[in-house]
Length: 178
Ligand code: FES
Image 1 (cartoon, protein in one colour):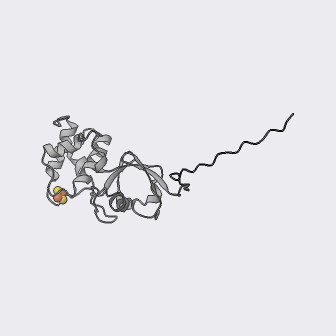
Image 2 (cartoon, protein in one colour):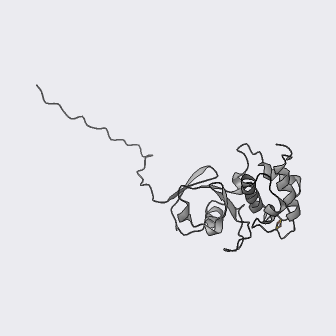
Image 3 (cartoon, protein in one colour):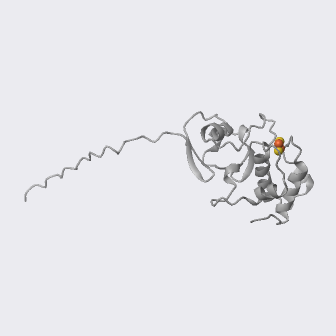
């Protein structure tokens, strides 16, 4: 029997294919999109959101004495983004204020309630209030004034009373245009 000849593998000349190693990093999900952070693992999440992703809704709210404007949802729970180094966020799911609305642009009920109750002054604190409200309503679907007053959020424009009304409006199912 004649010996079997090895077949030569054709070499592609497609210059659009670039061999690339996968860089090590911290994989996480933010507003439903997958990201890999390859920089300093100690970078606070707040800087990653604002400076790298340009998601500037989440605001600086002081260091570890947070006034709530830097709250995001991490695996569904409200957490201060300045206190979270990227190293702690591997495989976590982060939702910022930009991720609250539906994919078709429809507002989250809490967002609509803040509009309904005119609970927005200058707006600096609003993203944090929205995130805190989502978290609170998940834990306590019918929160009391006391529950709301215990949130870490502060509003220097004096919107607390209207914020209370907005949260209670969601709890009562009275949000308009849903
Ligand atoms: Fe201005 Fe709250 S709306 S700080």
